[in-house]
Amino acid sequence: MLSAGPGGLSCPSGGFHIDPWRPAELAVITHAHADHARKGSGRYIAAADSVGVLRHRLGADIDITGLAYGEPVTLGDTRVSLHPAGHVLGSAQVRVETSAGVWVVTGDFKRDPDPTCAPFEPVSCDVLVTEATFGLPVYRWPAPSLVARQIFDWWQCNAAAGRPSVLFCYAFGKAQRVLAELTSFTDQAVYVHGAVDAITQLYRDAGIDMLPTRPVTSSRSADYAGALVVAPPGAAGSAWMRRFTPCSTGFCSGWMSIRGQRRRRGYDRGFVLSDHADWKGLLETVRDSRAKKILTTHGRDAALIRYLGELGHDAAPLETPWGGRDGESASDESGDAP
Image (cartoon, rainbow, N blue to C red; front, side, top):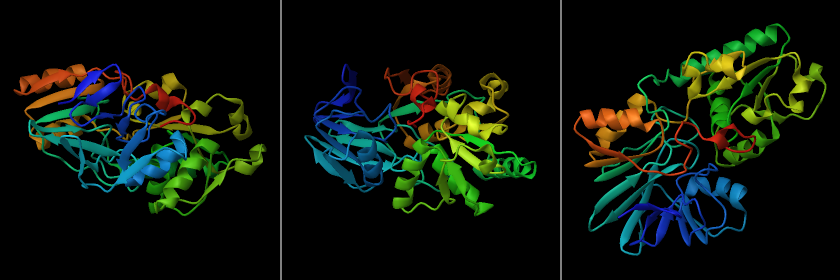
């Protein structure tokens, strides 16, 4: 029913592609990150909460239909609906039903609580196409509230010494999640990089409660003493950083759960906060889907496939360019992407 070809993951009986990597006549989009949502398709379908970000990133004039979660639409001989993926604002799993059965494409997802998006919803199916970004047993996430507390304490320690705290987060999704999580501890304003500022305003327009933010405009280091500054990873080491010297730097990512990653990347602190499912979350999702067949896309999927096979599942890889096969996408590291 679904197949991966030169243009992407296609559904011939429905006349659409899911997160196509080349322009398609009709693109059903799981979320607005750059490796899943690309310019050039004739029409788009996405979750209603994702429309604002998609217009911002793909163009205000795109032809797009926003669906409520669970709202079915008939496309050719298929019945399609979108269900919460818990990844970022407006992220969705795609459920495709035909007379031959039900497929679910998770897109990127997580099962941990996140105040900035609808929580993940398990969906039963015959075939599950799942991401495997962190598909190794070593990846097990701490409670997000604990990580938020660690970030706040680090910020306050630096503030007491008169130093700025520069926290690198992916500009779309992670930065807004941090700003929302920190409302449990403070109402202080946070300075943000321009790439973060634009997306944060879209989250505010969607009604997401976050700390107040101010764009970074001054070039004087004294103006940021004791402040928290949120910036995309692409800003690290750039001329833009000179205004904060001397400062303490931190990075938010699932990669920070691996000893040595923080040191190799040159950050003072690492905080384990991911917008992807960990090992436990991946296994729970396979179990909850009750799928007869599991296809894995981007990430560390070899270990996951092997383990699922040991449990008696029919599991195999499905080659896609989503995110790359080594974990969080290269676009995640850029200044204006996920």
